[in-house]
Amino acid sequence: MALRPHILLVLVLARAFCQSPGPAPAATPAPAPVGAPAPAQPETSVKDETATFRSRVNLIQVPVVVRDKNGHATGNLKIDDFVLSDNGKPQFLTKFSVEKAGGKAPAAVAVQAADPTEPSSKAPPILPDRFIIYLFDDVHADFATLVQVRDAAINHLDANMQETDRAAIFTTSGQGIEDFTNNHAVLKMALMALRPRPIGRPAMQQCPDMTFYLADIIQNQNNPSALEMSIDQTIVCANLINLPNPRPTAESMVRGATGQLLASGEHESRVAMSVVKDALRRLSGVAGQRMLVIASPGFYTTSSLHSDKSDLIERAIKANVVINTLDARGLYTDASFDASRQTTLGTTIATGAQYSQFLREEASANADILAELAYGTGGTFSQNTNDFKAAFTKLAAAPEYIYMLGFSPQNLKIDGRYHKLKVALKNGKELTLQARRGYFAPKEQKNPEETAKSEIEEALFSREEMRDIPVTLHTQFFKRDEANARLSVINRIDLRPLHFRKADNRNYDDLVVVTAVFDSNGRFVNANKQSVTMRLLDDTVAKKLAAPLSVRTSFDLQPGIYAVRVVVRDTEGQLMSAANGAVEIP
Image (cartoon, rainbow, N blue to C red):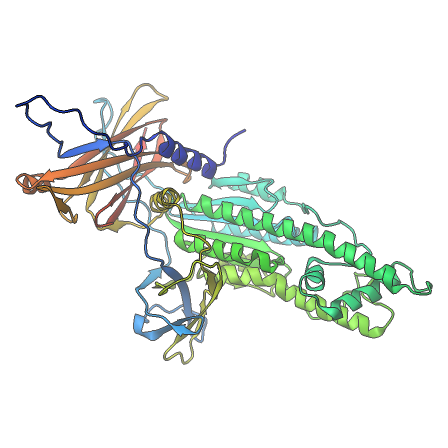
C-alpha cells in the first residue's frame, strides 16, 4: 500500500532525528603525554546531526481581510489603522504585513550536467505555482447535495484550471482521494465517484427523531425545553399515547438515543476535522499559493471539539493556507417545519413549532465551523446560494489582500483556556472586516525535541523565501543511465550576518541546513539535513567570513522536473533563510 506524502514526510524526518547522533555525554579526556601539544579543535565541521532550536516567543497570528462597500479587498491600510484586543485587553502589534494573492513559483537556478554530452544549461522549467485541494464532505452530505456540488466542481475545473495549477480531491470519509495533478480526466473520475458515506449515523429516520445537535443540548447542556419536546415527539412516533403514563418510557428512549447520537456524531465530526488536518499537511509541503476549498453542509462541533477547531486555524495560518468554504446546502429558507421529517409534530402544535426552531438553530450551528475556518485564515465563506459553479470560481481565488497581524501575549498562562479576539479599525467607515475570532492557550510546554521537529518541518515546507542569511543554491546532475540520475545541490552560505558568541578566543555558532526535493506535482520526494559546527578563532574569523561556506548534499532521482528548497537557520541569532529552486533532469 502506497504511503501518503505527509506520512512519508513524517517518517523521513523521524528517521533523521532517530539516526542522527545526539550530543555525546561529557567525558574526562585521557591525560596527554608530558610535553605533547593539545589536540586542535577544528574551526568548522559539518555533521549529519540534529540541532535543537530555542523555543520562539508565543506569537499569535491573526489574518484579517478588509473589504470596501463594493466587496473588494483593500490593501492600503497601515499597522496604526488596526486595534486588536485579547479577552478585552488591547494588545501591542509586533508583526504586520500585507500579503497579496498569487503564488510565487520557485526561482529558476542554474543547472549544470556532469555528463558532457548533456547541455550545460537549460531554460527554467515551468513549475506549478497554485495548489488547491477540493475537500468534499461525503460523511455529512446526502446524495442530492453531492451531485450538485460535484457537477459544479467539474464545470469549474474545465473552465478555470490553468497549466500552472494543480488540484487534488479529498473526502472526509478518506475514500476516493486523488493527489495533486493537472489531469482533468483523473480529477473528473475522482469527482464522479463521490457518494454519501456516513460513518455512525442511521441511514433512515429513527424514533426518537434525534440529531447530534439536539443530543448535545439535551445531555451536555441540560436544556429542559429540548428534552420535553423530544419526549413529546417520542410519545407520538413510538405510539405510546395510549399508555397510562407514557412519559417515563418516552424519556428512557430519548436518553438512550442521545447517548448513541452523541457518540456517533462526535466521531464523525472528529473524522472530518482529521481529514482537514491531513489536507493542511499536504498543502504545507508544496511551493506556491495554497488553498483548501471545503464543500460541506456543515457539521456540529461540541465544546470538546472547539480546541481542535482552533488548532486547524493555527495550522493553516502557519502553513500559509487560505481555507475557503461552501455551504453545500445551497439556498434554503426558514420553513415552519421540515415536512420530510415525520415526527416533527408531537402531542401539541407547540411541539412542532419548537422543533422547527431547534432545526433552525442547528442549521446555524452546523455552518459555524465553515465560517470560522474561512474567516480565521483570511478565506471566503459562500452560503445561501445555488450557483455552485460561480461559488467554486470565487472560492478558488484567494482574497487580493490579506493583512497578517501578530502579537505576543504578556504572561500567557499555559492553561488551555479560550481567548476571544477582537479586531477593529480606528476609522472603518464603509469598510467591513473579517478576522480570526479567538485562540486556545497551550495546555503544556512543548518538549524541546518536539519543538525542534515541528520548527524544522514548518520552515522546510513554508513557501516563503527568507533572506536573514544570504544563501545561493546551485545544482549539478549526473545520469547513470536513462532511468537514474544523481542530483547534487551546493548551498553557498554567506556567514557575515551571523551573530557569533565569543568564548575562549573563539567565535561560536551552529547552522542547520535542510535541503528538500519535490516533484512537479508538489509531492515531497526526499530531504537531507546537515549541521555545521563553527568554532572560529579570533585570528582567522575575518578570513573565514570573507568567503561563502559551501554545504553539499545529493539525491538519487529519476528524470523529471523538480522543485528544490533549502532552509538555513543558526542557533545563536536564530536567523532564518530559505530559497527555492527548480531543476529539470532530461
